[in-house]
Image (cartoon, rainbow, N blue to C red):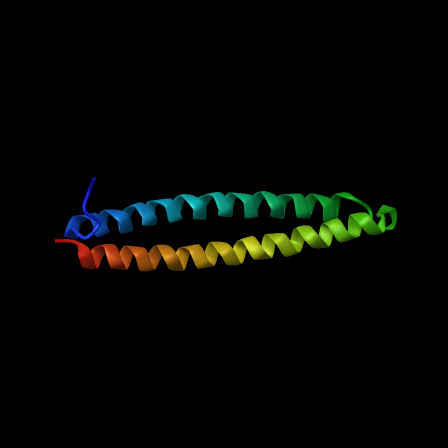
Length: 92
């Protein structure tokens, strides 16, 4: 079992966390893009006079979820930057 106090192991942990955060960021970006497309299709593809209240709420909810996902992408980008900076500090 690797020693977590060894100099290289914390660097490897940071690098793993950085890689994982980049993968999560990509997945969240893709979900945000897909949800934005669904929102546009619902909003533009259904005539306003033919919409039910439920559909209007669903359209609004897709917009709000897409905005939350976009904020999450921004936060993940900051996390990745911090991890990369930390990884560079630990580099020999």
